[in-house]
Image (cartoon, rainbow, N blue to C red; front, side, top):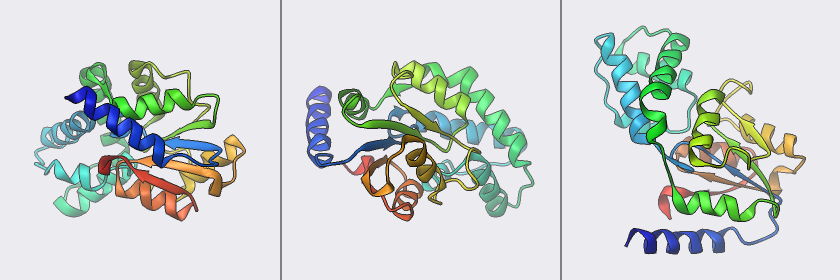
Length: 205
């Protein structure tokens, strides 16, 4: 049943992406990688170590935001005083040490990326740190396929601002209106719209 579901989703995604697009820009966590559960655990665990109990659904709500901005939001909602940079570092280390190798692909999206290599330009645009994104793509077996990576802290603003997608388009030499974005989070779709790009919400397929 899972294979049939993935096949139907792949076919639907292929139909939705037909057209004259010159570049496909994929989010990583939750779009290419089935790892949002692991990411939520790392936020909860790092916060709990300091005695702050957070609701993991916050991570879903802010999916696509750079980690530093998520921590700033945690501080606002829980009246905590985490140093965003220190928290982000601890969270990334925990993810890399305990969870990264458990990462599974979102099969139909990964297969879609693979099937379009050489046909359109490929970029990965993520709110995670570059080291985590590169490691995730290696675990998924697609590290050598994207032509461009744009990760957290590499643009003046992260999602939901358009900066990361505009940077990827510029690096690929493709006009924003000729790019198609694949996202699982609202922050990412808002960023794509602000960049003047069409988008597909993966978790709605």
